[in-house]
Amino acid sequence: MNLLRQGMRAVVGLLLLSLPLAVQAHIASNGFLRIDADHGQIAGSLELAIRDGELAVGLDRNGDGKVTWGELRASQGALEGYVRAHLQLNGTAGACALQFDEVRVNDRVDGSYLWLPFTALCGDGGGASRTLRIDYSVLNEADPSHRGLLTLNAYGGSQTAVLGGARGAQVFELLHPSAWSAFTEYLQAGIWHIWSGIDHLLFLLSLLLPAVLTRRGGRWEAVPMAAPALLNIVKVVSAFTLAHSITLSLAALGVVRLPTRLTESVIAASIIVAALNNVFPRVTEGRWRIAFAFGLLHGFGFASVLADMGLPTGARLVSLVAFNLGVEAGQLAVVIAVMPVVYWSRTTLFYRRTVMPWGSTAIAALAAVWLVQRAAG
Image (cartoon, rainbow, N blue to C red):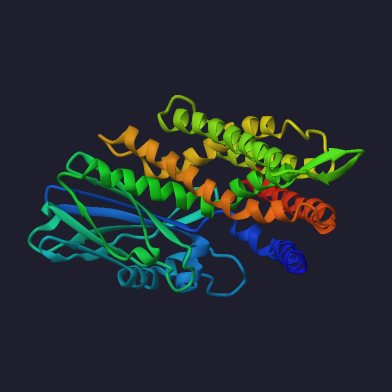
């Protein structure tokens, strides 16, 4: 029991100590790589967050904490050299030489991105290659969590993939991409998104922390058996899954759309509501209703990732289902990993009087910072 108590203390301590870092890292580090290969030509662009460009080549030349347009333009040569060293394309005829246009800026929901257009010369085969090998190692050293979201358009078809990390180089069939390849890529993208999307996980965690407790006499008490706790967990997770699956599908298929800033702001607000409900309980037995109501908004957040990746022509339904299954698999893995520890610690005063109130307060404080950031753009 002492070991368990020490483990829970460590969890709360890490949560409180990592608050400043999490404020900066609440949105995963993603690059956006677009490649168009058709009839003897390959062109494309790479988008990196300004903060990631700073990690890569040091854009802030005067060290004042801001990157100006002049500093970005002055870093053109360094950016080109870095991208050439960390992005290699190989067609059927051999390696492709990248030639860059002037760097530009694109604004996304999580900040400004540098946008570096390029063309690729791939030997005599050019863009007529039947395959394209892509080796993406951007920020592997500085930020191993970084991933590149690829959109590859070739001969009327579209493919997507998640690049980087330990996966190494990937080879893509340009003429006849397989539906199975699209399924596996979107499945992995869904898993990666839920694991890197700490805001979605904190919302779910806030609703699950009281799942092993019951409210009596104005106090939290441990549930006597596993069955009520398991039922609470299943109800919350099922409601959240059903809700975000509905809106993810509607948004991805273009039936319903919401402004990204509104969606991201409401997601932050939902975490505040769920976390503060643990400190000042208003909804105890019906937390699944909170999970469903706000889960609808979280679905639009998941859909924003699909909007960046795009649904490939000819495999839209397969890709949508795969991405959603990936989100559910990643979510279930986290629940299975966390909830046994939570259940076995439910009888301790430390869990009821420290983890519940102070852990929930830390989550609410972090989400409040996100709300301000997102609402202000």
